[in-house]
Length: 112
Length: 114
Image (cartoon, rainbow over all chains, first blue to last red; front, side, top):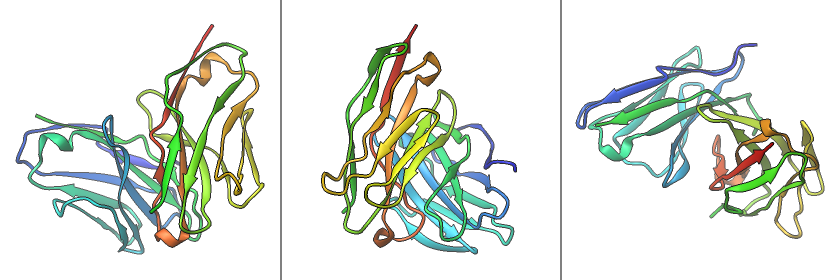
């Protein structure tokens, strides 16, 4: 069974731009969670989607948003990029009712 | 709120040495506990889990026991290899903290030398 895939793997953007990251979960997994990983703040939860609905959200500004499609694929969007948004963005999927999450390789975003 | 505290790294060991990484947690509910490992340039891999008190999770020679009385979930391996060099994260998922959220510790870098 294929794992979680994320595209693109690397991205360089300029401050003020916006970016969209994509995540395809493991087949059969309907829950998708997003995390931001930085050296200073570690791993922080962004949001979780299930059946196209956001069920949980972390403490991030409204510039960070996401959505989930009917095939469980998910996207996250960051608008008006700031230098501090440079991070590894990780997506994880899980089976309904399970607390185990399986992570993708991440998208490395660099904001210049 | 919920939190996870791990011992700081880096932890440097010789091959075949014994590894222990301490992890303690605070949680409002009854959490499930996990250890994840991250190799350079990669995402996180689930190493092992435990869902209730006294459960022992194990995988690839690593073990951790869910100790409710001490709110701990320490990771151990009896004989490490160079290939075990990575960053290890302790994490919890608390059903009272709602869906899809893992609370992570800061991570512990482990360096194993030949």
